[in-house]
Image 1 (cartoon, helix red, strand yellow):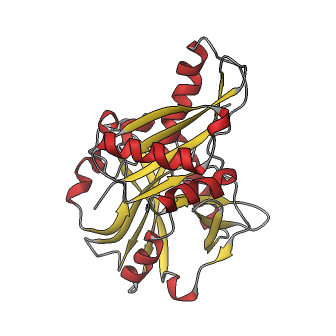
Image 2 (cartoon, helix red, strand yellow; image 1 turned 60 degrees about the vertical axis):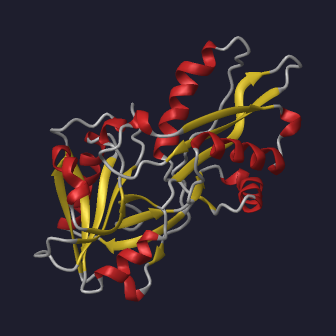
Amino acid sequence: MGAIWEIDFYSRPLVDERQKIVWELLVCESPSTTEQSPESLFRYAQYCPSDSVNSVWLGETLQAAMREAGSSPQRIRFFRRQMNNMITKACKDIGIPAAASRRAIALQQWLDDRLEHFYPNQPNYQLTTTASVQMFSDPPQPLPAALIGDKWTFASLTAAQFADMSEWQIGFGEAFPLEMLGVTPDMQIPGSIVYSPRAVPIAAWMSGLEIVAVRYQPAPKSRLLLETGATESWILASLDGATQQEAARFELSKQQANGVHFIAVQSSPDSEEFAGFWLLYEPVERS
């Protein structure tokens, strides 16, 4: 199975000799395990003149990236919804499925680093605003009845416990190296676990959603939400009383873990297997 690529094709805070804004394609391989080294992920960057910004240039340059990588990706993620038409067409033309997704963790870390350290040091730098991944969501929708778990709970694991995650029995899921987000071995990683005899179909359905984050919404209705795709949001549970307090502690733990958390699906609390397990990341707003 091929890798997943995260791409960003957008203007940068740079100008060319004609004082025209420079565009750039960034390609970054999505990590899939906690054992991967961030430095081992494939990366590719190519500037694009403003008068060449189109799906043809993008498709040809993606093919150049594939030649450099020595393989084609299984699929492509992109987070800028305003680029949907151009990116979707370019990827369709070269036969690679593409989908808008806020799960672009490795790309976002790379882009943030370039915005802070790389572009300002270029001679043609021009200060401007370049949007990052936004956690904007549509109004949350109910889960399909057949996919609602019988019960759920909050849980936590130390970051050190994820060291052997590749040996866990997991049917569906995705992970990333915790060091990429500054997580230390002693940090507590919070999460939520859904239990159901229908664990496998629930996890299979979730695997097609581009899972982004689990988030506590205290108002106007107290709910636990599952953020997926570009803007989708699902109601995992309605909360009251003690569960609201647990959810508030869950959010605090997420912040203390640099936004890292997880969601898991199991057939029962006694099971030693996971029908699904996803490491997740929601950017933390620093004051």
